Length: 288
Length: 238
Ligand SMILES: Nc1ncnc2c1ncn2[C@@H]1O[C@H](COP(=O)(O)OP(=O)(O)OP(=O)(O)O)[C@@H](O)[C@H]1O
Ligand SMILES: [Mg+2]
Image (cartoon, protein in one colour):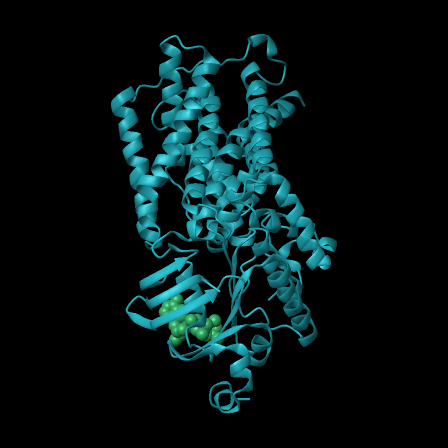
């Protein structure tokens, strides 16, 4: 029973990471109808920024916030400089661009920070830990929940958040009320970048940091997004926790840890085949 | 009266196909101008050209004495031109209230925005009853009301209306046109009104333009066109 509880709770902790990545993917998908394959690499690079600062003696939470700011600005810049050039490009061209960014950021990180696997500090005091969860896992759940709550409040309660939702849903009507749609898209990219950075920095103490650290996590994030509903950000967040738990339980009792990653693939395939709209996929209500 | 909006020698095209030819058109400050014409004449294109919505155009467009051609749609809107597009262009996933809040997005005068919200509810009491409802679930007439209400939230000087009567029952159409008349007389909002229903448009408008395949073939005061039987029969078919 104890091992089961442990697997369950630690699955929830990992699930928070997948939830964040899934949310970032869905935010960009809603606005652009594309999957940002470079989301994980952007996050990994931001985690390296945090690590570099921490190693230079900057206090952990200051480094954390600076890395988030970096991730935000990088996200905005990527949209303004790269993505917007491909506004009307065919889907395949955009996929290639995103994959290209993935490899460029990955190589850049390898070149700047080497491919060596490094340890990453956790800010949470060991005393926080319990029988079922390590201190870092507990802290990670807390940070994830705070992040999700802040993002939710931003979109739900601020005029800017409302304008960003409007711009993603109906760009033409948004321009007609004076919303600068291009900037809203860029802000969305910035926000997604920052959310991804939180996920990578929280994951790094567990998976260690190296340029390929996000490959598996991105796959789980994608599974979370699909499971929750690719057009519903909060569905993606819930999907993340479900995927995290499923991964851990399957790893412990079904397929074994070596094959854990295949759980993500199975979830992706099952969702695509049986329920492409996902568990919480919004059915569009419109009257004509 | 001086012209609030003026188009001079405007040509407009989608890609290579030209749709509007050498258009001269003006809307008087405080006036209502109707733009009539058959399907495909270029009425919608004219409105889209004014707001620079994915139309290629040449010629000059001035609004309140300033050149606006070449500006981004957002900036044209921010100068006080509210466009109620065909198909209404409401945010179907958002609530009635959120739609109205977005209408005032570019304004910073919060207190006045709250007042304007009350005023549009005065015009359209049904919207107040449906304030929390998702816009996509409103009836066609309610959606048209919401589209107009949202445009008013900009506190515009000029309202561009693309077939506000489209697909609505006669009673609702009458109600909406009565309200448009009030908006014009009480709030001094000028209008450029695109309509298929010539009779209806002539009853509201002060000036009329008739488009045929992208060219103006008739222009004059509405009263004159209304009383000119031969012009009416030749061009408007009634
Ligand atoms: N996006 C577009 N690309 C190419 N041609 C277009 C486009 N939109 C409209 N057209 C063409 O331009 C012409 C004028 O269209 P427009 O929509 O302005 O007509 P309209 O007067 O508004 O007609 P209706 O009364 O049917 O709404 C038509 O021949 C139409 O086929
Ligand atoms: Mg039209």
